[in-house]
Image (tube, rainbow over all chains, first blue to last red; front, side):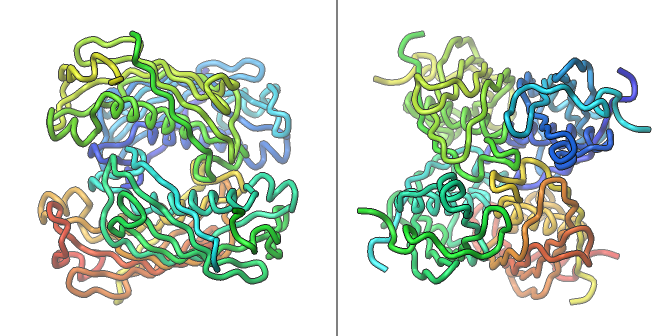
Length: 137
Length: 137
Length: 137
Length: 137
């Protein structure tokens, strides 16, 4: 799907690291969620408007992640979110974390499956049409 | 106020540490909040019942913390919460994090001021009477 | 591999939740890491002894997780770690997060691939024999 | 001390919030640490160079924070770090978190006391001269 990529620059702070001297693995999931939230914003929505205007939430239903190399404290990272599939209540993102910029060394790559659910009943719900077309240009 | 102390054993995991090789400072605030939640539970309440039965939330309104020594990955810690003052919508806890048990070396000590607010309007609200008497014996 | 299962009880605190009113997805990865650390401890090792006595670290190299239902603030959870494969520098854990106890409703299930690496060079390194046999009885 | 203020824009993501529907209190400490790290960077240093070139670390030794109003998911915040005192191994920062920009509504204000310690022995150590003069212009 063309026109659906978002890239976010992220600085590694102490909070993201652990006593092994590198970025704690679950921090990459936080970084990837930030990129998906920015993707949402690039479509003209955020979590609040999704809830208030559509009665919906987007939630992570599954993730497959591979950690290729370790990022370090003070590193500048680049996190991407590409929509590779959209159908009904479900979207799939291909995501990467790279060192420096989008051509930098691969730190982590993932396939994140996101579901749209009702904010009240948490049952599957069709994605707002704004999200199906991808980011606004 | 007698009968108002709760002590919680906490293990330090990778998630709690940072690249300086010690426990990340904000982790101690998470640990101390866990102890205050256990104090709540010891009074026969939790966050859910506070909201559902009283329409209330307890929120941290101020904290003064001093970090005395560093805790390390794999350490066993002991976190305490003592109510030292209760009035109207406001409680004050004296809290300590110690290494090993409650007689262990002092890692962190704090004074945490907690406010009871309406779950909807977030305005100050009288504390439920269950909380004023302290933990059930 | 018989004798290789560890189960850990975990309470959900405010720090683990998010504004969607449920446990934040990356918190489950933190919970599953705690269970793997307890598995390590059940084998007579921890992160510190692994580094000091073996010059080694265990790091997550890949994870596949599926989020089945949402856990809530104040929930009691049960997190398991089962070693399903061990070879050379690599172990695979099957992990589950369930509500209540090990027979409770499934919240999250995962396959976590862990690598043993040199603490200094972060290159693959044979697992200590203590870890190959599973937990001590 | 003139010329020593750093301001950092921060977006509130799901990871920063809790089930009370607002930013989790310890997240503000993470935000304020990010601003102090950016202050360090504005002086031409970061945690890595501090360790490698000076054998030093900066650690939080005490904090007093007051939470004035609640920030929400998707909010844009502005976090400041002002050096108000420097002496020997010790610096004091006045910090604020505001909604929107530096003139926005006050969310949190704090006084953070930071110590410079040896990276190996964690004993007090004179601050590098680069840090005493404040940010480079």
